[in-house]
Image (tube, rainbow, N blue to C red; front, side):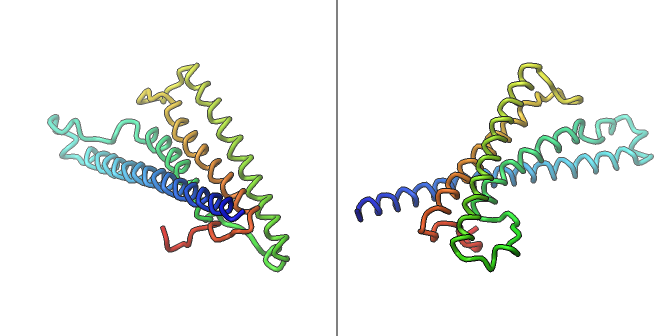
Length: 194
C-alpha cells in the first residue's frame, strides 16, 4: 500500500512540475508577444508623429517614415494570443479572483466541495472553449478569412488560443483532481515561487 502511495505521490509531483514548466513557458511566450507589440506600437506612434511634422513630411527622402501598416490588426491578434497563453499559468498559481464571503466561515468539507465544483465547472468551460476554438480555426481556414490590411490568415490567432485553452484544460483537470485528494500540499505553489 505504501509503495502505491509513493508512486502516486511521485507521479503527481512529476505532473505538477511538467505543468508548471509548460505553463511558465507559455506565459513567457505571451510576455514576449506583449513586449514585441509594445515596441511595434511605440514605433508606429513615433512614425505617425514624425511623419506629421511639417519639415519632414515635405521631404521626399523621409517618405518611408510613418505609422506601421496594420498595427491595429497585429495588436488585436497578438493580445488575444498573449491572454490565452497567460491563463494556464494564472490558474495553476491560483491567481484568479475569488469571492469567499459566503464560504470562508463554512466547514472545511463544504469549502472542499465548492472548490471541487468550481474546478470541474472551469474544466468544462475550458474544454468547451478549446473545442469551439478548434472549430473556429477550421471555419477561418475553410473560408480563407484574412485581416483587412496585412492579409494575415485569421486562423493563425486561433492556434495560440487553442494551445492556451488546451493547456488550461489540463491545468483545470489537475486542480480538480487535487481538490478531491486529501493531500493539499501540491494544491497551489506559494506566491513567492514565481
